[in-house]
Image (cartoon, rainbow, N blue to C red; front, top):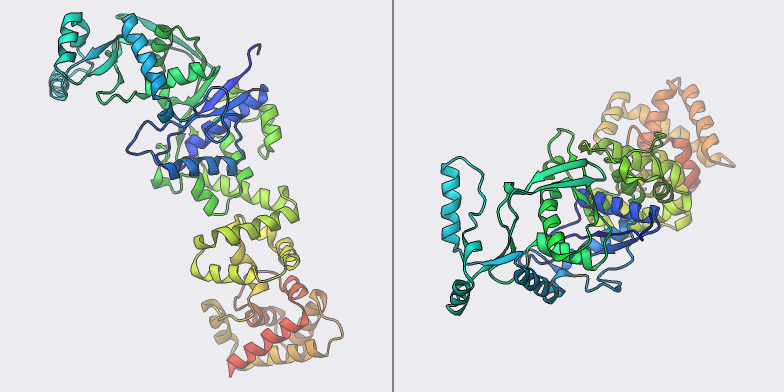
Amino acid sequence: MAEKVRVRFAPSPTGWLHLGNARTAIFNYLFARHHGGEVVLRIEDTDRERSKKEYEEALLEDLRWLGVEWDEGPDKGGPYGPYRQSERLEIYRKYAQKLLESGHAYRCFCTPEELEAERERAKREGRPYRYSGKCRHLSPEEVERYLKEGRPYTIRFRVPDGRELVLNDLVKGEVRFNVDDFGDFVIVRSDGTPVYNFVVVVDDALMKITHVIRGEDHLSNTFKQMLIYEALGFPMPKFAHLPIILGEDRSKLSKRHGAVSVRQYRFDGYLPEALFNFLTLLGWYPKDGKEILSKEELIERFDITDVHNAPAVFNREKLYWMNGVYIREVLDLDDLTDRVLEYLRNYSEHLDAEDRKVAEKILDFPREFVREVVSKVRDSFFTLKEFPKRAKPFFVDDFEPSEEARKHLQKVGTETARKVVELFLEKVRSAETFGGEEFKKLAKEVAKELKLKPGVVFKTLRVALTGETQGVALDLLVDLIGKERTVGRLESFLARLK
């Protein structure tokens, strides 16, 4: 590409960063970086009632966490600021006036009641509503009189009659639209605040945006915006409209499908690299079929023309699997250990009460011990949130047996359980060295001497050492907790049996 690529991501601070918007941000970022271009972050906060500063801060924080970087924005500045629409109102007024003076826009004095009557008439006649254009024919004298009377007005864009617009979309191909399908549309409300379709054109043009990459729900808006580009004499950017994201039931992704915000996945212990990787594959797929890709690989491979036109399906199980792959295979052990500890320090309020207690204990242990535990159990957890549950036996010495554990003790009988644990404890105490190999050897000796099946002995020892009937391999457990803590747990179990 001869021109310098400039893209923008322009979220509204009216809620948390939605997965669909996050994917749009990622595609913009990958496209720009692939072409050595620049990313602009712009905050579209003209919705005064719903826009909140805390949402803006959260959006920026979640984007950074996800790994999306920008070159210009409200936090960084840049040559084309301000980067909040609420700080650009004077600029919009200037261009609205320009459209009025050129005749591409006009003042509309229709009252809400008159417009509602038009809508009702269209409804009765079974046709789609479009504004009648009543005020486009007002004479300059009538406009002046209404202004002197103080009548409120909106500013409407004068849509040319009978035009067919042709959009060569980078994803959808050629799309045609007859502008007669919409009437003259409002670009400035009666309270003076500008409307999205107007300000987005002014912003994109003045910020020299070359490519507008956004969701296909904006496609109908694009044709209105094309008319405004023409009227203001701005160069037209290239457009790419991304397919919508569906839930697994093939309806539009929403809260009924579970978590739909980046923040919630963060709280649920997902890794940003895995979520970034997964979202990239919603609508785009590498030609060689490789799915686990680093950000650098994605930048190198990403091509906007390879984005599919069909809707993408959000497969929650696949994201869960992919996050597990990152935990098991992608992150090195030290990095994973740091992520686990960071999660437990910062997000423990998102754990259930039992796991929160475990998290507190984990944070009391030396990092080196936690690292060893991570190395032993990394194959058994798929999110950082699951770590306390999987790692509990390594950190908690005082526990109550589970329902399943109590059933096992009832089945083998208290006396048999006592004999197994007492004999095993005796052997452990007298052992010169004790670790995983010795554990297996001594357990087999107990089974042989008491004439019990090895499975009964191992399960009873598991109940004594963890309070559960299944979980981490016991040889791995005793290797890490050592002889002293093993003896302590066996003694506590025998005390509870009395």
